[in-house]
Length: 201
Image (cartoon, rainbow, N blue to C red):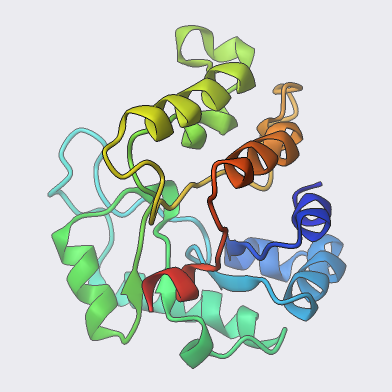
């Protein structure tokens, strides 16, 4: 759905996928198509590890060796699709949760850690109704993005908007169903969509 929308809108996206995703044969055709059509393919950790405690961010849950081995495993699977490290140095940490030590380890390993821009609720597209008060509907997410655009001094210029490729089946209100509408509206406001490497380099 996301790939089809981006193709229809003639824009390129950036996909940060886990090693588990790259290794799943069910997704091989999609990954090849994303690469062939010019989208950015990056890493999101091999096994989607939690690097730091949720309540004490400075408390690491992995060693440097575990971190490097996991990240290298992710890139090894990316290489099977012809994605070279030098062309995919940007990396989004799993759960989008990390600390200064993880940032330093990433830099020492020759990668560049990036994360979404705060200010919208786009990252809550993984929630589902059974989560109670934590659930955020697609309409709420959509409105939060437009509210940010309208109230931030810089609008959404340089903004990294994150959404999930896959979500829990209990969430039938998939936010990616709103992607075409969102892109169309933002284009009408003069925004241009670019890959992460184009944006940051």
